[in-house]
Structure formats: structure tokens, C-alpha cells
Length: 335
Ligand code: ASP
Image 1 (cartoon, rainbow, N blue to C red):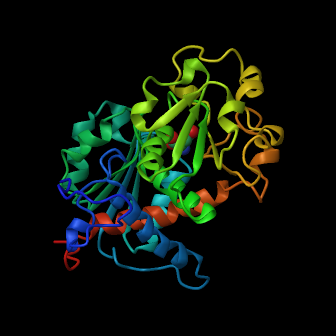
Image 2 (cartoon, rainbow, N blue to C red):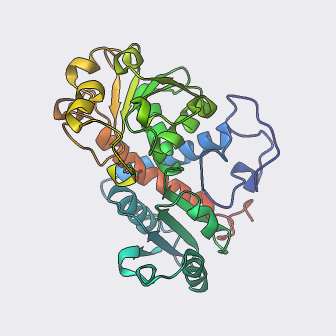
């Protein structure tokens, strides 16, 4: 249930926040539902887990011991599924992965029947990825435990935006005022939607650049400024975030050819030189090398934060799993 408390910009959380008001949501379904201080709160919690994960000897903190975490993935995933699994295991939960390809979904089971089944097994937290926008909300409405959205259709991918924000905050020192350019298949990208909302909420200047066929309507409503020329958007950028062409979501030809797309929207070392000299390069993965990004940029250790994004993914997911289960675990002030 969203808090009614209004918090002045820049304040990390309400001065009187006791307990659950520190994060007044049962589920994490979107960035659109979060206030800036709630986003900052999750980023601050994740900082703790970055330190734990970097510890050589002991990465375990068993605060979720005895709880069951189900990762129900109805779409393919490498980074998100693995990092949610590692995050749950490091927190001591019993983690079970449900791959839709091997489940009764293939036999025609409805999403609601799947949700009721997961609920009957007394899951304590469910992480869901689904190809349809809104499907995760539908499941969240049917189960008794917290639900985390691991990507639903073109809609949102909130933990990706949080890990991206954490990466930027750590590498650049702050987010407010940073010029962040998001380039590529914005139309089909849940990563772009969550990032526009998250970065704008944290005070960044967000630019989105795409061919007209891949630019969604009204990006201004998500806090971003649209561009069609990549070079124009790149000028003065502090961060350049590249997106994959999501061919699996395309119903028709949105670009003339990958070669032509690369010529206009591919990030090369020459093009990166138009951005600020120390501009950071990001990509949520998986990358199509030679299409939206060249290896010369992706593998440049001084400029690319791509592997750091993966590292931050584990920390952010640990923070989200911890925070969302505090109430069920009876953590003082959260019940
Ligand atoms: N891994 C991200 C997602 O699930 C980005 C991508 O697939 O291109 O949306």
C-alpha cells in the first residue's frame, strides 16, 4: 500500500519513518509506483550487499533461512535468473526455479491457475518474468506473499533500473544532473521504461534516442527527451546506455537492416568520443556485438560498466528480497 507521506526532494526517507514506512510496498512491480526516497532507500540497502558480496571468505547471511523463494520465469533469462538465484541463496532461502518450458504452462494452464498453484505451496516470495505486460501484477493480486517483477513484456524491469542507478551512482558519485542517453530499441524495452522513470525521479537528465519506428509515443511523460540523431543526443552525455534490438518482440520490419542500424545507432569508439571524455558505457545484456555496440567499446575497462552492472544486480536483488520479506519475518518495526 503506497504511503501518503510526501517527502521533500533530496530527503532519503521521512524523518518520522518507523518500520514499514521505510518501504511501504508489499510487492516490487514497477518503478512507476516508487517515490524518489523509496528508490534511494533500496539503493542504500544494496550498498551493504555490495560489500558483503566482495568479501572473500563469507558471502552468506542467512536472514531468509526457512523461507521459500520461487523464481517463475516464463521467458528466457541468464543474468536476471542467475542473480535472483544467487541473491536468494546468499540470504539463506530455499530457492526453487520454475522454467515455463518444462511446466504445465506448456500444457495450457492459465496464468491464474499457475499463480494459485504457487500460492498453495506456501512460497514466501515469488520472482516472476513474463512476456506479457501486466502479467506480474495479475499474479501478485492472486498470491499471499511478496512478488518481484523480473521483467513483464514491454512494461517494466524494476530491478534492472535499480542496478543501473546503483552502478551510475557508484561510478559517477551521484545521479542528479547527470546526462544519461539511452539508445536503441526503446519501443520494445522494459529496461528503457524503468530506467527513464528511475533516473528522472533521481534528478538525471534523460535523453532517449531511437529510429522513429522504435521510439514510443510520449517519452516526455516518463521524464525523457526524445532524439532521432544519435550524435546530437551523445553531445555532453555522462552516461550512454545501449539497448538490444529485441527481435523476439518485433512484429514486422522495424529497421531496414542490422548493418544500416549499426551505421546510424551503433556505439563505436569514434561515436563515443562525441560524449564527455569520461562518459560511462552501459548495456543491460545480452549484447549483440557489432549491431548496437562494438567490442572496442563494450570491452574498454576504462569506459564500460557492463560487468559492474551484473555485479550490482546481485546486490540490488539481495536488498529487494530482504526488504520485501521483513514484514513476514517479523523484523522489528516492519510487522
Ligand atoms: N535482459 C533485458 C530484459 O530482459 C534486456 C534485453 O533482453 O535486451 O529486458
